View 1 (tube, rainbow, N blue to C red):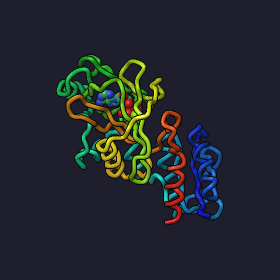
View 2: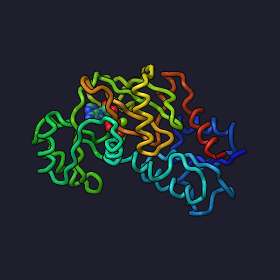
View 3: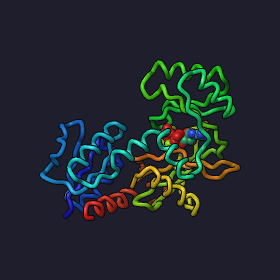
View 4: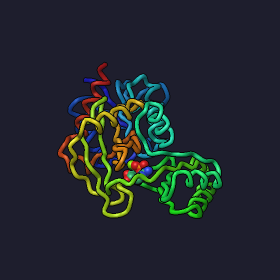
Length: 281
Ligand SMILES: Nc1ncnc2c1ncn2[C@@H]1O[C@H](COP(=O)(O)OP(=O)(O)O)[C@@H](O)[C@H]1O
Ligand SMILES: [Mg+2]
């Protein structure tokens, strides 16, 4: 049996489903990151063929993926693609380069330049951190005063927040499309419908309803994963009334609990199969 490690920090329902699916297919080593140090070049249990990275925090995910690579394991997802997926600006740059449609975006390094960028994009404008999830700290700014104030607050937060990433506001139909991709294939899709407000994150109360995957959405989601280099991901697409689907982000450690219960697709089994296949090749 192949040996597979799952690196995680919080055992959410997703991690429990993944562990159950992996157990039937591999010799599973559960590595709870907060409990013990990881040794570079020294795999746990004497050897690991593949590692599945499920840490919630981006830096825990990227660093533990890097350590797993030092063990000689096939890592899903590898550290550099995880970093590229975890930073929305890095992701969007890779998508643009490949010609995948995205919302128009500008980057600014001072509050003044952020106001200029917003004026170019038009109001309201989306002002979100390059790193983060669940819609946290994402703002919809109505005018230049709001943009300046948000930029000043971000500068006070420091670190990655000092990179001002502004996007055109896409007038989507109160929902977005989440597509789960595994090993170059779209395996499940659901609309996330907002209860009101512009954020459609499940963490913000959005409901998942099953979606029929059309060829265009599938092609864009799979292309986005290839552009970023991830093997397993949740890709967020929004529908622009004129341009059609635009890719918003690629989640390298995707949540899939509500999508699984909405669609009945066993996402955990698809991921487990892929990881075990990577352990074998
Ligand atoms: N440019 C945009 N236009 C319209 N809605 C957006 C835009 N960017 C983000 N959103 C909304 O905000 C939600 C969160 O944004 P997203 O980029 O997916 O970041 P995260 O989910 O990591 O917080 C999206 O699901 C979408 O509903
Ligand atoms: Mg999202």
